[in-house]
Image (cartoon, rainbow, N blue to C red; front, side, top):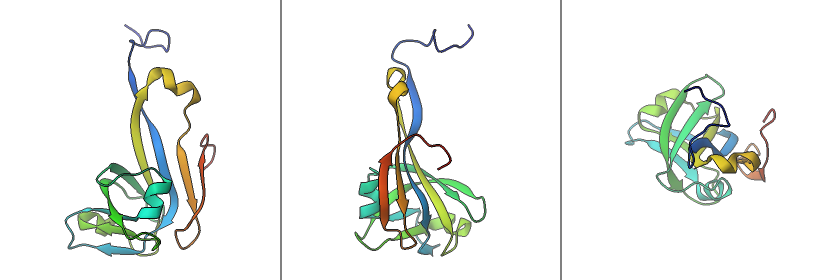
Amino acid sequence: MSFSPYNVPQHTQVNVLWSKLHRVTVTATELGYEGSLTVDRDLMDAAQLQPYQAISVYNINNGQRFDTYVIEGERGTGTIQVNGAAARMAERGDLIIVAAFASIPQEALAGWQPTVVLVDNKNTPLSTEARVLAGV
């Protein structure tokens, strides 16, 4: 059976970008911690992230990519701390993208737009928009 958008089984789920923190700055690394990415609660709220939610992290400075999960950081601090073994993949000052994904019904794809959170150089949200990702 060949694939086409016209013969997708009913109730098919598709993985999509749910939200992303775009170009946030790593504020600290902690190699001795068990793992995860500590994220300021304000940034979590802006990107609709929940504690222990799976995420992908893309380091703009060195090209490293890794998967981990979110832990809640102190609200209003701008904290983006890479923990555990992943701390070897980032340095303080690196710019990263934090991406969260979700499975949505095939029928919802036509109008789907992820939440994109843009920040300033202190990781303060500048805007939170649901939009098509054209060059962002």
